[in-house]
Image (cartoon, rainbow, N blue to C red; front, side, top):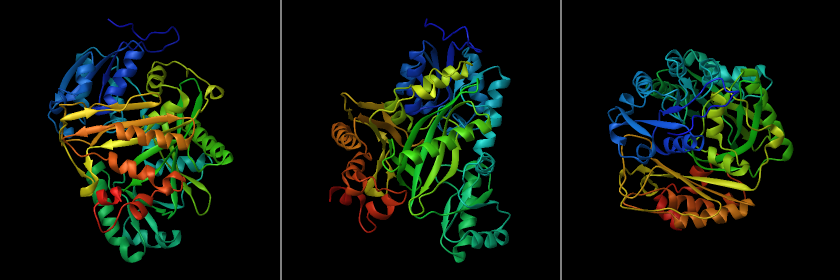
Length: 470
């Protein structure tokens, strides 16, 4: 029996956490629970009963069939399973129900501690339009844009006023879904129809709005932690501009392009917004940096732990997931702003079961051989192993390779070495593409924008693998 995480100052005594997620983040949360002496119960679908997370957890319970809509997205089943296993709290990880305010309320009504922000803060920051309005009130700059669109006739003059190209965005969107670039008015009708349809299917909400599309943009995000005692601290920024179709591929900390003054300004804006929102927990404030104009603008806030949180952990030495649990207990942050010290450079490569040679086609299947790199400054967060079958039902992420070194140049070199040491057989992965990106002069020089992978790195007339080997 492990020691309950109980401290005299704590508001909630968390002895056992129900992990409402799967894959590498489930393993990550279980490890954080172990470090705090807390038991972990993992809810698994029928497709995940033999996963590494299920093997590591103190107990694993089946919550439904393989389909996420019948398991990981079923709030009532998750709450019931948490209560049946005598859990005190629920950690949602990322994705699935992690940013559903209704799920937070269901947990609270059942007497379970939700390891994350309040439903009110989640609603305020989860809806993109509400968030940008709140940002403006807090004095944080937003990308020039509109409110919710009421139809094509409403959108036409607004788009003309903003100036083409514009970006149609779903208010409930994420991961590039419900998002379309419109170059001129002739494309507006079709793009609106496509974006609203995709948003409705993905999020159950067809509401969209317009923003100015910034051609040469970089994606910078600030990691924050806040507690219920009024403390808000930032842990520096992450550079997330290496993307494909609005999906992040490589993240690093710190950003190679920010000046000290801009770094301070972005961090100050993030802290100011979080204070204004009355937010508590881990969160990420995302900005777009206009390479041409030099200004930065608020994009959105993610009210959960991010996939790329390890790069921040590597440069700060702070366990963000453990800190989430501490804050959920009602404890103050275990560190102050003055104690946050960023050291060296970290890079993360997302390793997906996808074939870059076939337009990144998902490659589920049996992993017949599995060898991961080890050594100082290398971390590999994964739920996979030799003999594991990657199911076709979920996201294709099978691991995150993270390295840390004293400088960015050394971190790139270290990552290239680590990628060579990652050997996976039985399925295709994105590792070769990452190696080619890291070797590209533009990436080495820190000149990557959010469109660079698609416009300059990936070929337009031949398979990716040919470009990777060129």
